[in-house]
Image (cartoon, rainbow over the protein chains, first blue to last red):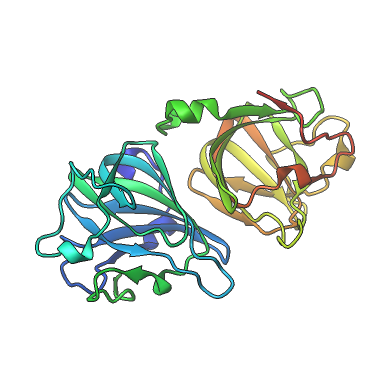
Length: 163
Length: 163
């Protein structure tokens, strides 16, 4: 899906692809595929892929030590993508994962077209979801502290990664 | 050139294109075209375009206040691109701008193919140059402090930007 968008991947890139199921063991519904382009002590860039109707669980990036928390900027590359962030409920395109009303509390929908960007300051609760075609997006961020991420769903275990 | 590489630009992106001649008033030889994708207080992403045989002057990112200096990661997108950084002189593809030997002191050449990445820690002297086709590349960085950049060429005036 990434190469279909015209992005040239090196062999090194391809070795940096993982899939996360967040310990929920239902990756087709709740999960994300991650290609890490780089990850230094100060910043990171990833390409995220969602399969059709796949949902990344709601979470936020808390302060870690002297770091105010991860700031993230996403940029749409391809496909059908909606983000959910704080604000009035205007949910139209997306859906709440079956039986998980309490785990997806942000209902302000932002449709992300290719090239659209969204800045997520530290602490911003967010989740996102692909529509019919799936979605490919960039995630740029300050220092990655993913193991410190906080999730609304108490069943999430962040460190589970399927290689 | 950017759109020819398959990157989708929004109208907002297109308004964020500038050209820098570094006060040298010979942009076709020494200069760069810059599309800023985003620029927050903590990080930035830009697409840089070099015309055929155009050269970005040698510079480095010094510490600024409590910031250890801008860390930059570049990633090749398209074209003929060589970077010059500290290390043994192995210069082969590129050339020193006429009469400017003392302004281009780094002679360790790294050929950047599409997808190749290079991490430039703060303080790393670097310059880069396009070959026959020109070049398009990403520059990801921590907080932008470009007005503080230090240049080897004493004639550089950083703030000159041609809109």
